[in-house]
Image (cartoon, rainbow, N blue to C red; front, side):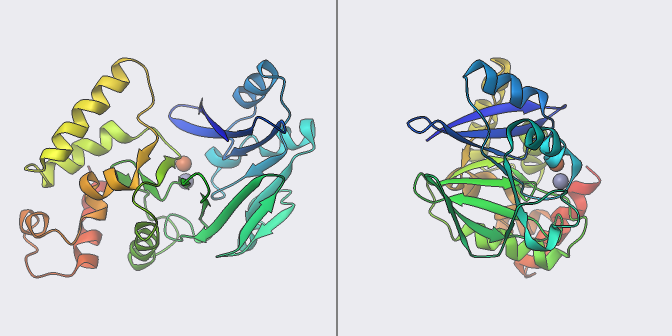
Length: 253
Ligand code: ZN
Ligand code: FE
């Protein structure tokens, strides 16, 4: 399977997964239809499936037009069927979605929205995290609670460390500025920031990241780190308290 990164809107990423042998495709979170159609036409492909991580407009904006053009099937979390128009396949937490040669585990990860899911294509170890886990960041908590977001990230942390992370936005550089402020002695993060700057200078995406990289560098996955707790004056606090404090600080960063 091949994954193409399609920049959309200002800083969104949609992803097209291509089964080249059978000429079948999926798109993850089409923010808008035009860049997706342009890409597919160039490659002489059609669109079979539209997978949505959550109902926000910048993740489903292209759905209806793409479905109309290609007769694609729209997939989304079962409880979001009223918020994501024209859903064909209602997904449940923990289920395996399998069609053609595509095979993904659906993991419900509420917090950013209540119906947020991620798609784990376990055969190739690719994870599409929408607006829950970003490279060096996590999503704003719009609909859920701190506890929900925290435990959603804990679910993701249980996946294999080599898992590649494909998230919904190019926020990595901005996120890195927040991470380094409270984790300034983290050598791995310092190196990662150099890598990020080099990629962006060449106009390349900083995505995909890996879970291993995020473990080392993403402050929102490091709320059990004593150094970070102490930098926040939260010595002795729980990881959830530290995480919540970080999320508040980031909202005003
Ligand atoms: Zn969102
Ligand atoms: Fe978004």
